[in-house]
Amino acid sequence: SQQGEEDPQALSIQEGENATMNCSYKTSINNLQWYRQNSGRGLVHLILIRSNEREKHSGRLRVTLDTSKKSSSLLITASRAADTASYFCATGGYEDTGRRALTFGSGTRLQVQP
Amino acid sequence: DTGVSQDPRHKITKRGQNVTFRCDPISEHNRLYWYRQTLGQGPEFLTYFQNEAQLEKSRLLSDRFSAERPKGSFSTLEIQRTEQGDSAMYLCASSPLAEWSIFGSGTQLSVL
Image 1 (cartoon, rainbow over the protein chains, first blue to last red):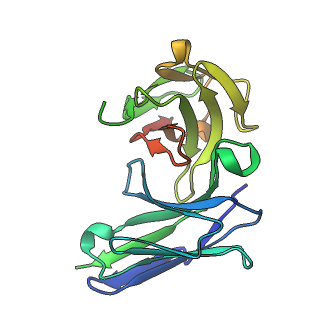
Image 2 (cartoon, chains in turn purple, blue):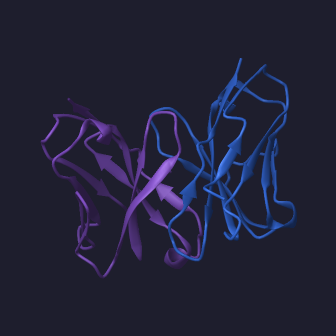
């Protein structure tokens, strides 16, 4: 079963606008990660936020984490057509529960119109 | 090594045939994972290796599936007697001691 659930399932915006995606999860975590997947390709790791962090930035990406609500958000600022992809949150990994694999949500499909 | 390599990129097979996929992880990564992804869904964990030891298997990994990682290097995933429900993208990922994973481009399997 999926640990995280992303919202919305699909998002279409114009180039230059900001895109916000949300992720909810069920169990306690040590960290939460976001990945991007271009159509028909593998996943690319974007950013990892630890449970003791509330916000993290990487370039045009901003991730927030609210452990009390078991939720995270990914903000992409000044979006570009090249940001068109599916975005997944993932929890788990070696430190979390001893289970070493990641558990992914179902993803948000982002379309950025040029 | 520039990344995780998977071969083949695409595989079309007839129901009942056996297929084998290969994954070459980043050489210094001792952890290797296989995931399966169906259209519109996130990847689902199949199995995990640390070096040559297969330490974890998902209940998704039926007895028709077998994975190996001889000598802790490349890994193979074999599906015997394929079924149409096996059609999916099969993703391999490797990981150093850090928590994140680096994924290959996947093998897209179509079972006719």
